[in-house]
Length: 110
Image (tube, rainbow, N blue to C red; front, side):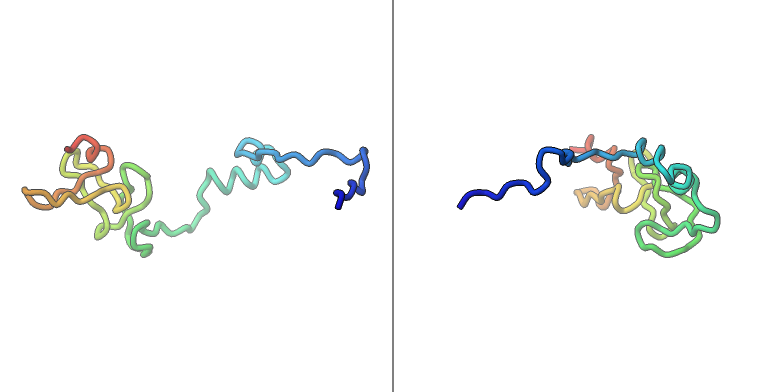
């Protein structure tokens, strides 16, 4: 059975995929609103902890990913003393005991 022909003929425009990035979005029809939404945080937004998602008194941000971390979820790297979240740190259960390492310091530990 042969393929059926295109019903639109030769006059139909090509439908190509177009990559739309941040630059195109910010220059578009609602560009000003988009820029305000992305780059300026709205007033009254709660600073919830990224690990436990509680709207607690968040005073610190993770040194690696800049997400807000509450005091009960924050971890301090034992090498560089940086405050990190649970996603950006690992706990090394070695011979010495528990040792918290941020992702930056963990690549140097063997």
